[in-house]
Image 1 (spheres, rainbow, N blue to C red):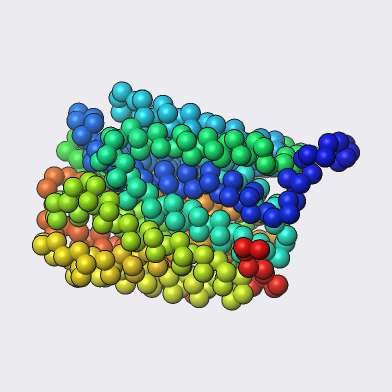
Image 2 (cartoon, helix red, strand yellow):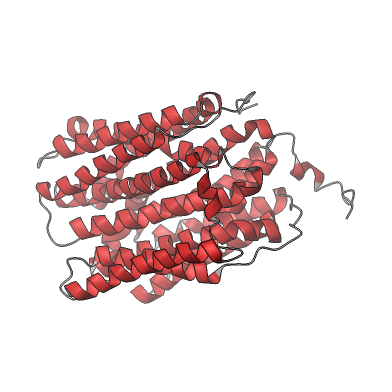
Length: 472
């Protein structure tokens, strides 16, 4: 196959500036991360919209998406390599916005959960393809910076999701928590079709490990359900024990299957790299802490301080606004100094934020003195940790394992979010809340953040040389 066919596609392969490609691909990734946390704020409105559903049942509007997204991320990386990154990216964006429309039109909880599953498949298809497209647009020496900035976009979206969600839901209703994806996704689809160039397909096609996917979904789903329903009167202790045991057995079966099958969903050989194993453990612990913190924010604002949905959204805004500049600065510096100092420092800062929220805010609203400082601490911690986790995860992997290694890391983060949501619903999702009900959430948050810091002490990343600063 010759390259000299038409003059038009050539600039898209390596344009004068790679930043237009970066922003087209990152807009779609922004939507995925935004959608992962936006529904934290919409949770109360969703329960009001479906009054017959319990908090545990409604939690599956969040967790069904996250479980399927985590399981599909890994094979999606291989699909992008074998079927073309642009093609898989555009199909993923199309499926994501179509499923978003179906979510907004849902008339029952079952319909909404089914649409969320389709939305998760679209999100999983576009995410690794987006990162691969971004990396292909930049020279090798900018890889550390590019990955950090791509992670910063996702980190900012995940942080801004709850505040944006509360404003949208309060203003125009819960369906717009999904409809908001349509115009943004359409812009990414339109510009991506025109700007992105297709990459050569791999000579051999990787098979999809359906058994591995089923075992992973069963393991994560069963464990999350056991946590969510731990206090539910409709579940007996023996049923919950059997459910948790099913999750553990499925997880063991997943690992056993991956060791013996020829093309497993997860290549366990990746975890022979010490840094990769430590970063993924840190990603799991930080993902749990992140989900718990943001979900708990809205419970506290509404139940203890009795803020309206819109006011709660505005109250959270300074935290997300802190994420982006810190993440961009982290992306610039990580290419020179490595990821470890930012991971350790950011995790300790995030633990300090949890300690602040545990000790300082009381029953009476005192936003400027009791809440705002904690938001700045948490926003800075997220900005330091999230992009560095994405970059550090692949820093020691061979180039051939980059896409799959990145997808596994993203999947681990999503599994952490599932566990974080499940634990928060267990602790805070049943009836009227008192101030002391939040102590367990904050204590777990602090412990998980400190665990992240300890794990990251063992991370070894080598700074890239000659990293250029974006903007030129």
